Structures are given as structure tokens and as C-alpha cells.
Image 1 (cartoon, one colour):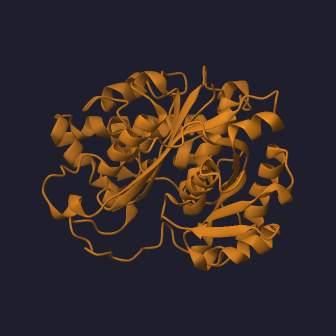
Image 2 (tube, rainbow, N blue to C red; image 1 turned 90 degrees about the vertical axis):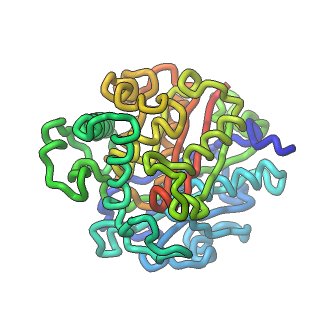
Length: 400
């Protein structure tokens, strides 16, 4: 029976660019920026890397569809380089591949890297993708805001929580994330907002207003992984960040083809979370997880995710959010670096940016005003596609 990769892989080093409208840099510049920091943090030389996995989503605005172009930019020493894509879960797919290679014994040291130059598409949001096997069944229009906005009414109806109260919780989420991102020099949007601003902002797709939506950004992030034994030998005086679980779940169309899905949550997240907790040996995530980075593409998404992850009880996210449970000084801080709300969402980079935030917190490398108290176990949640036709990648990381 499969036992997973718990404690078989350690993160030796990480790097992350500043996210934003990076007109100053191309995709090649961004991956070099993240890679140089990652390599320096790992304390190794380029020749020590035995395999690399690079995640990008849109060929046209990055540095090409071939893995070879990335190898040329990074001047990797004739090692295998694989290019991956799984929409918004792309970056964590790169990490999963690199981690599996190390856990399997195929190599001792592997690189995972994610990059995206979304601003160069010319779109105000994400480019529209293809229709898939069952195009637009279930009422979704294909645009991000309209797809995710439709989570709110079913959630409201299912738990008998007035939609106005759901909107209040959504506003608190956005205000909280901006408060966390203000002091983060790598974030795109670094300014405070108020609840009144959120509730009175122009509507994008009801009930989502302007401040309920994440931005469009450029960025890159990277990780070098190895075995815990090698990591401890190379860094004997440092805590070692170990991967406790990496799981993924992809929708197969059932949610849109049958009436068993109530539209109030994300089934892929529920499945991935259950598998990740089992792999990590977590029995009570509300007590054992100490911080989170989740895929807050829209504020309503973060709200329902809290229940899909089994942190808040069914129908209990509103009370937890409004009580400050997920605030920086709460029981489980969520979006500790500002989240997608403040970083934007360069698709191929977001998942590794989330891991970078957890990694920095576990090693206590952030200023005191941004440090999570008693940070021991962090969760990252990466979501791609639409609520009913998507993918969830979930990671759990910790120090012993």
C-alpha cells in the first residue's frame, strides 16, 4: 500500500521575485532572478542539480513551450529538464514532480521553478481557454469572476446565511489579506483597504466587487529539494523544512453532469485535503495546521475553501472569519504574505510563491511584524480552472 512521501523530501533552498507589472523584465529575467536567490539559499552549485521541472501556462508570453529554452536561460549542466502545465496548479505540479524524483531515488537534488508573464498577454484578466469535453455545462460563462461568483448564492442557501452576511465575510477576507501584504516588499498591491471600500466598490460579477478579485501580475518562484539527510549535512545548524504531503485532485466532469453537487464548495479541494491529511498523519487540521496560503483568486473562494479544507466546520466559515480566526493574530493565519489578493496571480508561479511564504515563516526569516507565532506546520492550496471543472493541488510543510 502506498505510504506517500512524508519526510522523504526537504526543501534545501527557495527564491521568489517581486510580483507585479514587471515591464522591466522578460520571462527569462524572472526565472533567473528566482533561480539565483534559490541557488544561493540552497548553498550549492549549479552543477549539483540533477533534474529540473519548470512550470508555465501560456507559451506565447513566457520563453517558449520547450523545456530546452529554460535550460538555455539557466545554463543548467546538461541535466533533464521537463516543462509542466496544469493551469493554476502549475507551480505546485513542478514541485510535486521534483519531490517525487527525489523521493523515488532517481536523483538527490532537483529544481522546481514556475514563471508567468501575464501582463504581456494584453488581457485585463486571464485569457479564455478551451471548452473541454463538456463545454460550459452547468451555467458557467468561462470568465473567472462569473464562475466563482456563483459559489456565493448556493453557499448562502445551503447554510441559511444571508447573502449580505456572506458579503461581509468576503469583505473581511480582502481587508485581512491587504493588511498582511502591506509590509511585504515582494507583493504587487501594498495598500490598506476598509470594509466600506470593499462593500461599496464597483461590481465585477455579483456579489464580487473590485476588491473581491485578485490582480494580474508577472512573477517567478523556485525551490531546490533534496533528501532530509543531505539537507542536514549541508545545513547542520538550520531547521530543515520537510514536505509532509503533496496531493492533487482533478474534476472529471461529474459536478456539471449530475445534480449531486450543490455548488457551495469545491469537491477537488475536499478530496485533495483528505488525501494530504492522511499522508501527513494529520488527524485534526484545525488544531495541527498553524498557517495557510490558499488560492484566494476571489474572496468567496477563500471563504468556502476554509470549510472544504476541514478547518472550519460546515457552515462555520462566516463565524470563524468574522471572529478573526484567520487573521494574522488569529488561531490559523491565512494569506500570511497577502495572498493572490496582494500578489496577483501569474499562473505558473503562484503555487511556489505560496510555498515560499510558508518556507520563510518556518525558518523565521521574516520581520517580527510579519512573523506567525509558533509556526510549525503550513498548508498551501493551489486551485485551477472553475469551481466544478478544476484542479486542486495541496501541500503540507513542517519542521520537526
